[in-house]
Image 1 (spheres, one colour):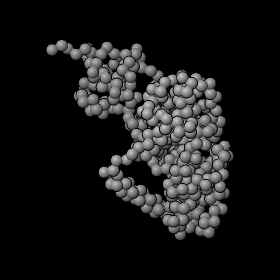
Image 2 (spheres, one colour):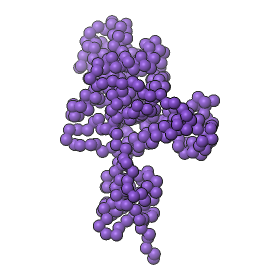
Image 3 (cartoon, one colour):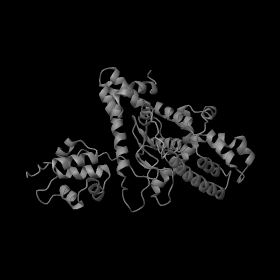
Image 4 (cartoon, one colour):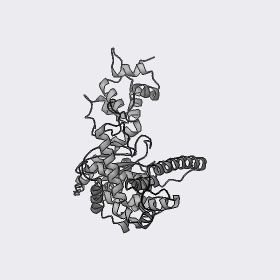
Length: 401
């Protein structure tokens, strides 16, 4: 029986590929169906040991890297601008899951692609000029966001709907219009992160978790926008944790406060007739009142009550009690939805999903380059992971037809 041909590669590249994909040696070995010691030997060979060509293909598939990368002389420069804003003191850098690693990598690659596409189209990209310091008054920063995006109280009221979709889409479009790429992540869990930001003066990136409910995604949009304004890239969530390092805790609290101020301006909220009628430290808020006010400001019920607590319009005890209620209702609703959809095959609208996940700016750049014969229809399909047959409908959804 002929011996398997070994792949003549730099073993350090196997380690690089695994680490940048977010796998431990044990996790990767399990997924590859090899012994952990065997994988460790491929990464740090003490003898003439290396994966075979078929084994290398499995490595490339798992780590989502082209086969040719493993034949490079040295590893490419790693994309490291991500900062973990939830790590605990003394634990060092937190390890992201492979799913989150992939979303971050994909977002950065999409940004690089957008820069190239815009250059090919000779399209001038607006600079992201909104700035802030995390020592500023968050209320004022939130007001600056509203002014820059042209959001008024009446306009925001017009976005009021049952699930928050109108508000999310409207805020997203306005943030994209000031030069931000907004993506929706689909693979990482809501427990791991609500989103992340890649700060830059040109085409910065906001990614929100599509698995979150729409009102939470809207809050994430504004939270990550605040990150871009202070030019801090990183993975974050919307929960503040006293165990975080003081600097990171300050940034997250600041960004949460800015998001709340942008979505629920103090002057608008405190002059709202129902808020005036309740008076200070009220515990008489009905579920119907809270829900209706939350829809008016495109936020969750919890976010609305947290904002009322900030201005002493309810009590900490009442807020905590209602928060527990909302969490219990959310969990029960998730179970109910899972049961209802278990045996139902959901029909997917792939063009709509594509625009929703990639954002109109990037989709339009890709189609614009296709119209000018700079890239092929097959390349458009490949970049977006969308079948060619859906491109015509994609043009309609992206507003190009």
